[in-house]
Amino acid sequence: MDFLKMMKQAKQMQEQMGSLQEKIVEIEVEGTAGAGLVKVTLNGKGDLKGIAIDPSLLKEDEKEILEDLIIAAHTEARAKVEQAIQEQTQELMGGLGLPAGMKLPF
Image 1: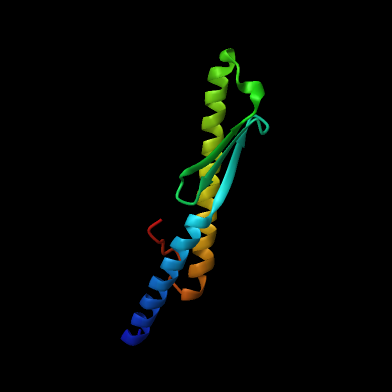
Image 2 (image 1 turned 180 degrees about the vertical axis):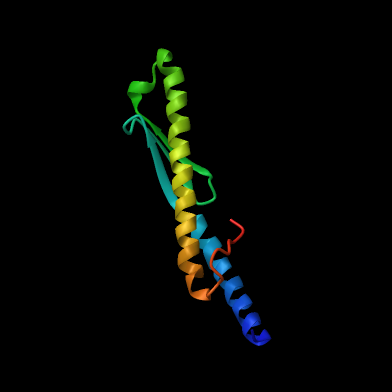
């Protein structure tokens, strides 16, 4: 492979990685649990941006259920973030002609 071509591809990849990082921060997903009684919103970095709890769960004897639902909603939202990042990565890196199976550091 031509060294100049490799350097050009490396520069292009570096530019696209910067673009990808910007897009990842903008990603926002919602995870729900308990048929929507608990909703958690995360950004692409996994930071918790919001939480909504249905008032019917705000009873002292519902504490453990509420805790479990928050964890479940967070887990769902985290999985959605990971999927969105993977999709963004594939979209941006698809045109680089990288070898099949090459994984980026995500």
